[in-house]
Image 1 (spheres, rainbow, N blue to C red):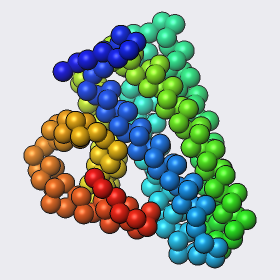
Image 2: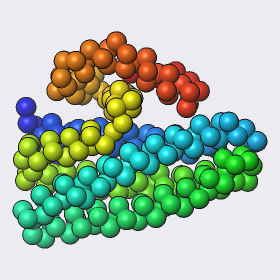
Image 3: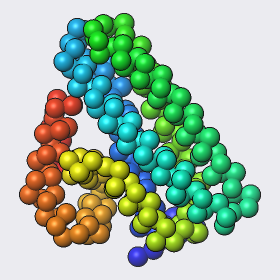
Length: 227
């Protein structure tokens, strides 16, 4: 079913999916800054866990942005005139975010070596800056560009973007990626998202995925997660 938002633009199910995926990056970028800040000095084992989580986070974010740059924007741009500036702004923001990620990586590598408090504090501050920059970008994309996607991008083209993202996700991370998407969904969003998955995927999620995701988030966050 297609509904409308307050701006009068159609909201298709697949643009809601984009907001759900964005919520993963908002949450994890915020948590990374908090978890690094809370880490004990000299706890290199904890630093390595968070550094690995950061690595996986950046792989996912890079795949998400390159999927948009290479598959979504080229389909959308031919339909636009003045609104094309909004899409070009998204590409520029992706490049700016890549620069910020590189800065975090340098500090992450330094911190995990000895887990010094001064390195931790500098890293946490740069992670907070990354979170703010990312959220501003995602907010603008959802507000300005997703309504254009809803108007001009076919379901086949949208599905191709999703299939590329799925193909770039390691098989042993698929259920964890699903849990990350479902974690902050409303009950209606969760039911709708799961209903579009193949039956075997839904069964795997119920039998294995929930426990796998809880173990993963418990190891990283040190607390239980409900999905």
